Amino acid sequence: MKKAVPITCALVCVYLLLIHGGGRPWTSRERTIINRSDSLMYITVLPQDSAILRAPSRDISRKELKSREFRTLKDKMLRTVTDPSQDGVGIAAPQVGINRRIIWVQRLDKAGEPFECYVNPRLDSLYGDIKVGPEGCLSVPPMRGLVPRRTGVVLSYLDQETGESRRELVEGFTAVIFQHECDHLDGILYIDRADSVFVDKTWAEERSSFTYERPSWWPY
Image (cartoon, rainbow, N blue to C red; front, side, top):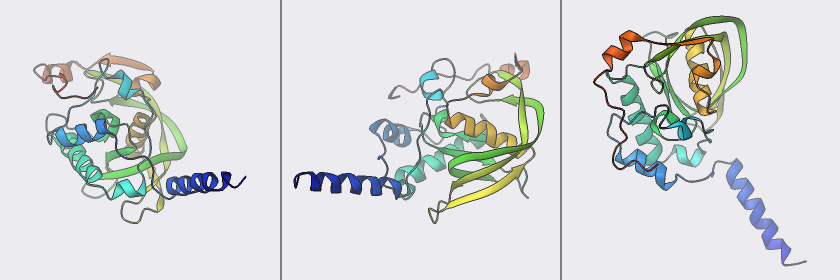
């Protein structure tokens, strides 16, 4: 019976490490993508990157919040979504090949419409009317769809400075962006929810010369 004691203690230590932010470390694939990507990261697209886009993402631990990998990934994701070649209003980490719960959202509901980063975001509840509106996705070019969404969300996420949990009410089109990006983290795409999907001819013409080829070093 005495031999079971250190094993039990070890299991308890592992459990405490996980719940207090130890988590699993960055994988070699994740490090490769983070470190070898240019400031404009490769955007995963259907159908060639379905395995990544359809996989659920895991949390960022409190320890990983302080890592160089997190800071680099965060910065490169912002540069990518705001680059004129992409010009998006939001981006999720699976869209750059990283199945982690990190998103950037343009806060169209705030003065100056700033982009803000959210770690481990979850929609605790949806509220308000259901409205159908057009949506597109950098990972599903050149399609658009008409998607029913709630007009309000209750958002929870991890504060990047303190590691504490935060909660926020978001309404309007910004709430739609949060629903779209949080879906990405669960392997859901807007086309799964759309009433209809169609080719956006203007977008197709604009991106006619754009390449969706993976980088030669891509680890998948």
